[in-house]
Length: 253
Image (tube, rainbow, N blue to C red; front, side, top):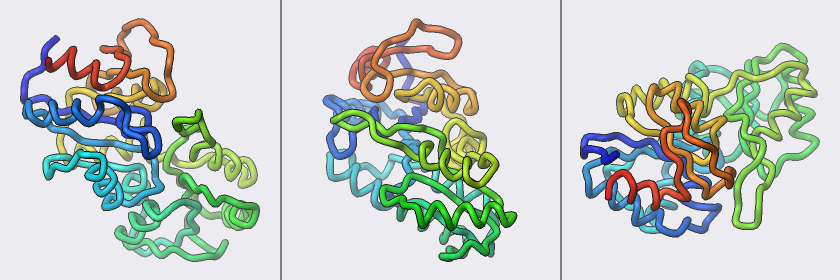
């Protein structure tokens, strides 16, 4: 099926555009083809580590530098679930902290808080887990960026945000409210920014495919990240391709 220039694609980053700092072969050219065809391109990532500005800088560094590209992150979705003035204890990177502060949330190093917010944190330690546990056991709400247990890299998977959230949930005694893909807060945020898209491209059926359902659009699964064995087409999977370059060649030409 060849798509018209009025299409709007939502594209995952990790496992679709890059693996950590390494661009996936053909991905940069594929995005350029989409933009040249007039397709609206929005990157949607559950990775809460970087700020939006850092994501734009990273994209520009690899050759994707266009004012027509949009970015929506799980950090932004998590921030949308809180109210200005909330006091939060945060386990996560700069991306999560910047998004929360932009929302008017006060970030404190204390267990006396309104809410605990957890994302991907490569410096997680027992002290952070202990503070989060005390806060949750004392009645704080619990929000998390995403449930993905692993993160794809060129050398294989590493623990993702979902693994950290699971530790906090186990010690805290109850599960979080999820913000990122495939949940409603991120879908609401994205639709509010760009309108309803026509295609979601990702490397995970559980999160990216579920997000497509939330968005009310088709889902294209690529084999360049976490998923490496192609399932058959179904109601949940409209397209399967080795990578985004092959997908764009099939659908755009």
